[in-house]
Amino acid sequence: MKTFLRRAALTVFGVFALSYGGMVAWLVANESAMVFQPAAYGGREQVPVADSLGLDLQAFEIGSTDGVRMATWIIRGDSTGPWLVLCHGNAGNITLARRQRYYADLARAGFNLVAFDYRGFGASSDVPPTEQGLYDDATAAYRYLGDTLGVKPDRIVIYGHSLGGGVATELAARVPAAGLILEGTFASVPAVGQERYPWLPIALLADNRFDNAAKLPGIGKPVLILHARADGTIPVSHGERLHGLAREPKELVLLGGDHDSAWEADRDRYMTAFTAFVRRVTAPAALGVIP
Image (cartoon, rainbow, N blue to C red; front, top):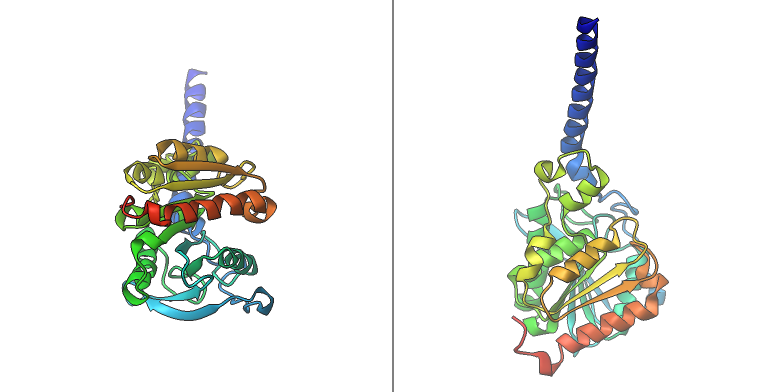
């Protein structure tokens, strides 16, 4: 009887070990596909620019690293207004209809925008996206503003939504700018993964980190964090944690809607907080204070 029970226990343990190992192997093999999803939200299809939005738009390409060409839009709102570097999330591309409407709102508020697609996204070079690759692409967009358009750092605010928040945080940690805006952003990729798969050693397995929680305390720029209370993709606790880690001056604004709809669902609160922050950190009185 003891021999039978021992064999049964070993069999159960073996099945568990194989199953667990299979889950780990699947996660490792599919991590990049889970983090980067350029085929989602309309994929790489180019949506025509809506004439009704009246966007003052210039579409072209800029170069990043390793010969990558990035599809880029410059959208002008007010020639004397500040500039926003827009780092979008892990899906779709800059031409999506919702993003066009968003750009139009920001332009009407008097802001000038540089929106770009990472490698492997939209009409950019068909190169597999990586964490470092996205960092390089954002740096190229930022440098275009200064090197080609002559925009001074104290007139630039860096913005990132969702995965783009990881890109924006990394950029803000390395370059001078007037401020940083994070929307629906996570503490880190492993932190999100550990919440979704608590039985797996995500922190040890994840190659893509986007560790905003580690980087944010070292950023000496004003920070605005926007997060939907009902965000079902990145829980609001992540936004609250990032706010706690950020240095002063900082602001946390909780919104209605969810991960992708806060701007439209709670538009007045969103735009009021967004525009007030950008105007404040790029105002003449703020210049010389921000590294």
